[in-house]
Structure formats: C-alpha cells, structure tokens
Amino acid sequence: MASALYPKWKQQLIAGDSTAALTGSGTTGLYCAMVTSSYTYSSAHQYYSSLAGVTGTDQEITSVTYTSGTVDGNDVTYTSVTSGSTVNALVLYRKNAGANTTWELVGYLDSANVTGLPATTNGGNITVTWDAAGIFTL
Image (cartoon, rainbow, N blue to C red; front, side, top):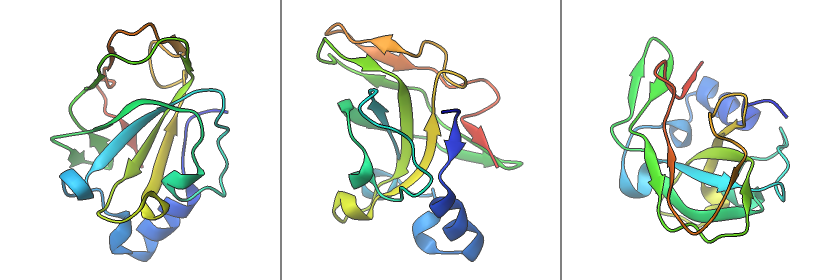
C-alpha cells in the first residue's frame, strides 16, 4: 500500500468538523504510531481502535506548522522499542481526551515516504526524521 491520507479524515476536514483539526497539543495533538505488517491500511478505517500491530509508545508531533497546505512538525523518537518487530509504516492520528475509539486517523506513511522503513526493532531507539519538505501536503 502506498502512503495515503485517510478518506474519512479528509471528509471531515472538508466538512469543517472540529474533530479533524490538527491544532492543539497533549490530549488534542497530532500523534504518530508505528505499525507492523499486522496492520493493513483500509480506506474504511477512521479511528485508532482500527489499528493492529502497534509497537513502541506513540509519540506526539510537537511544534506542528501548516504552510501552503503542508503539515510539518518536530521529528519524533521512540525510545527503547522492544526487539523482535518490523515497523512497516507510521500512522498519524489526532488524539483527544476520549477513548481511542474517537481518535481520528489522519495519514498512513510507508517506506515510499519514510526513509528507513521497514525497520527492525532491537531494543534501541527509533528516530523518525520528517522530510525537509514536510510530513504531508494536502
């Protein structure tokens, strides 16, 4: 599967739904999850609870900016990721104060857009360095 923005999120964005906004931080911020091959992208997925094969501790993307339709933010580091998994993709989502059944999936990024994927975990850190052009562009 090539990288993609989730259609349900794009639909909410177009409709002006406040749950689609990527502004905020902490419990209302933009987050990134690492997933293994246990997860298969589906355009029907809408919420974090649809994910499988999440490894490591999800990381908040801080200092998010929006310029000319491009979303960017600080690089993220997953610390001491348990060994024995292969990270195939990253999933961006908007966290809120509710349960993960309400956290909106935003984007699926695979090896076509993320240097170093797939990555085998070995108990060490995994740092995701976003492309200089940004994380994604609408």
